Length: 112
Ligand SMILES: [Zn+2]
Image 1 (tube, rainbow, N blue to C red):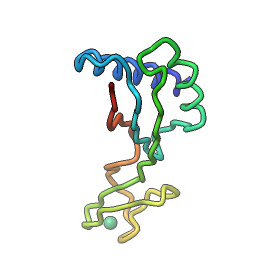
Image 2: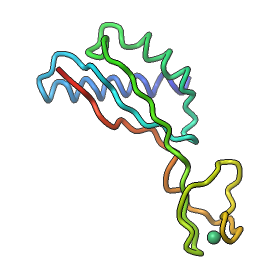
Image 3: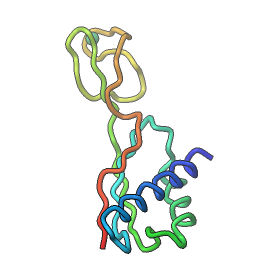
Image 4: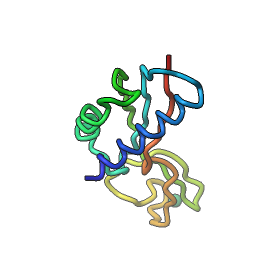
């Protein structure tokens, strides 16, 4: 499952960060999830709930923020896309470069 491997990698990253800062516990995890990242937020949360046991993230609260899809076109258009089509809303061109919305980001950690 896609979400499972992302959650596992995220927890590992959180623990690495905590060790660097000599923190004993992570209390908040802030993430940003691109609308096209393929991550199902419900699944993601469920995976996190079962995976966090025994890790430094055990008591952490998970925050998930959507990242909108954004793109750029050679006509000069730059901005938000509705995600239903990949045509430029300004010129109708289809050579859009996707600049946001496809990734998963770990934004911020609150540690103790
Ligand atoms: Zn265009």
